[in-house]
Length: 115
Length: 147
View (tube, chains in turn purple, cyan):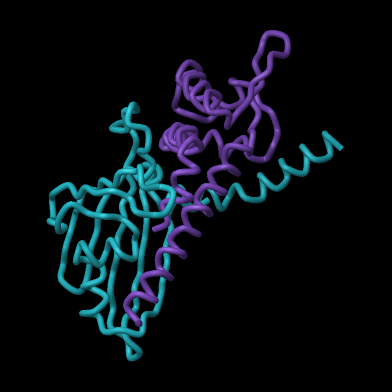
């Protein structure tokens, strides 16, 4: 594989690892799925229908917030949480980049074994 | 969103030739652009130095997982560990697999890189497919907001 792209994206990977980790949890993933329609929701709305306490849901939301996948804003007494697609978009760009590097490496392998 | 990369490439060379290009550490190094210290041994760490022009200061390190002759070579790695002062041990390594299949024209090589996160893939894919519409809407919403 071409190391060129890898090294130039090293700094970005530093930012990606926590994003992947934040999504590596069923509850958080389902919270993201819930918020992905773009509508902001309160903790109460996000806790409804779950076998989890408000505190547990809040904790998961804070993890998502720490990597920027959700944003929160205070309205009166409650915090509203909203989905932010940008970190996901960046992950996708990053995977596309790794994918292109494999294309280059395999094309070198092809010329190597076919010559 | 998928967190797995898969590449399929048809090579006009016999399986034995492709296998050698993958597992002979000198041959691997030639097309991959890395100078490896020694042969790949399953269960052991492979070390070396990148030879890609301009990136010769980077080290190569991978954990060789499986070597099944003319069928499968796999390793895990932290491909972005370029800062010697950083501790990368907490990062999830990715798994790279090379699978070989004999085809009439030579060899079909399937390369996968997976493990960019720890989410069970079936579930995650389902969740993300479900979300695609939502993201599009969200993007539109942002666009109209900033327009």
